[in-house]
Each structure stands twice: as structure tokens, then as C-alpha cells.
Image: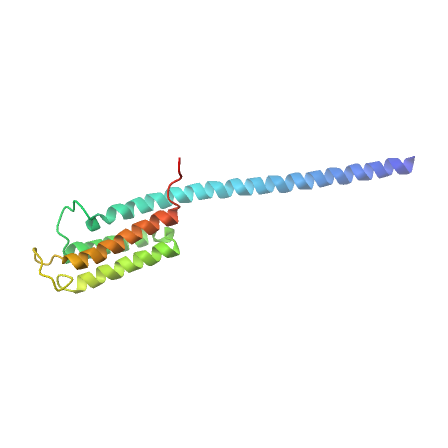
Length: 158
């Protein structure tokens, strides 16, 4: 009988240690998941704030309702504003795909800044970009904004 009692005690102790180990592992995993969830929520908030600022900066590339003609000076200011945003606000939040779109936009802006009028067409306003050059730059801006939405994951469907 003493042997059975010892065996029962050993089995009970082993079971208790197994339950304790399993409970600890589950608790660890839940805590880790909660920390990661909180981090993801905070990261999405910061990313959204940064992307909203970039969206606003890109106003000169609007298809409709622009406040001023798009000149090389406007494009130059936009390129500087984008660079400042990239290094001070949100460049680190860009996905690889959206960073590629950002760089393509900056290259397009630099090309438009370097060429008088941006192209061969006559322009109505001195130093204004011609329609073809503006459309190329505008399209790059649109592609960047689309990539931002994709990298952010868009918005959940309700």
C-alpha cells in the first residue's frame, strides 16, 4: 500500500507540474499576444497620422480645384516638403512598395524642376508645367497615395 501511495503522490505532483507548466506557457503566450496587439495598434495610429500629413502635403498634385498654377517653384517646394516629411515624420513607416512610389515621385519632381516648363508645350503661366509633365507628376503622387492605403491595410469593412 505504501508503494501505491507514493506512486499516487508522484503522479499527482507530476500532473500538478504539467498543469503549472502549461498554465505558464499559455499565460506567457497571451501576455505576448496582448503586448504585440497594443504595439500594432499604436504603430497603426502613428502610421495613420504620418500618412495623413503626407496626403495633405501632396495637395499641389490635386487633379481638380488647385489653388495655384503648378510651377517649378511649387514643385520644388513640394519636393522639399516631401523630403522633410520623409526624414522627420513618416519615412520609417513606409512599406517597401510605398517607399518605391515615394522615390518615383521625388524623381519625377526633380525631372520637372530641371526642365523649363517641364516639356515642349507652350504654357499659359511663366514657369508653369505643361499639361503632360504635370500629369506625369500627378500620376506618381496618386500612385504613392494608393500605395500608402495598401501598406496601411486600407480601412476595415463595416
